[in-house]
Image (tube, rainbow, N blue to C red):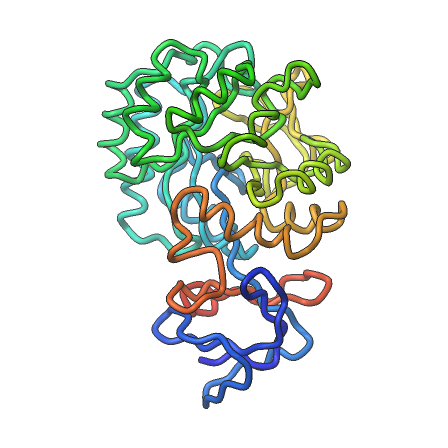
Length: 372
């Protein structure tokens, strides 16, 4: 299969080249390729499939509690939006609830469900700080527990990929030291200072969960976790729904730290649906005007997917090339999956999006197969 005459996002730039696909993978990307089975991309953009490393759910279901058929429906929704890889993300629950969630996700993944592929489980909670709990149920927040984490990792069959943790909690250092070579350790829901963040990064943490949200704000004498981002080679998630972070701040952080930023959805079950009343981790969430919030006004995840977030970032003034990187290659790189996913390069899976110049999505190819 040969994609011809399109404008291809290749090596971080738009280029007039062709892309050859064989057996589900990209084998060649160059100008003036020839072949018999061709797809005419004239006047269109060819982008890599997007990667969402932080999603709690969509279409009325939650990855933490969904049944297999519901999980497949969620994965199909993401695929239809060009999000060809996803890390299902748990919400804070009891230890038994966490065990059920990772077990169910591992079992579903073993069945090779249709839709977006699972790149791993993102464990957001229960090792978070009550002072920065956000929309997590405080009753189930606990200090980091290596024994529980070891059991969750075993139950996941190795699918556990991201561990979210507040570095100020007792036991956090041991978790970072134990898992940082195997997993992505993400600092999350924390009031940590700049010095505490730097210490955690130097121990092996390498990621920040939804930058600016559920942490202390940046202050010129107390830079906190946001300030620490600039001083270490780590990645940070960014929610680009225009609700969690003001567009001016999104522009500012992209100017300062673009190569480190991964656009995420942090979507909850109302993503893909209309305004109404929903549930997240046992808490009631009201969605009004695309904002999801608890009764006290606390933001409770988003109802925007990563493709929409990428388009929002472009609309906010982020260069298109950077927004695409932050929705594809950078999130893949942040979890060590960039050798196979996240960009249009020979040897990688042929996850490709055919879109109009205004970013209206037309077709989705996953591993070279037309799925939309």
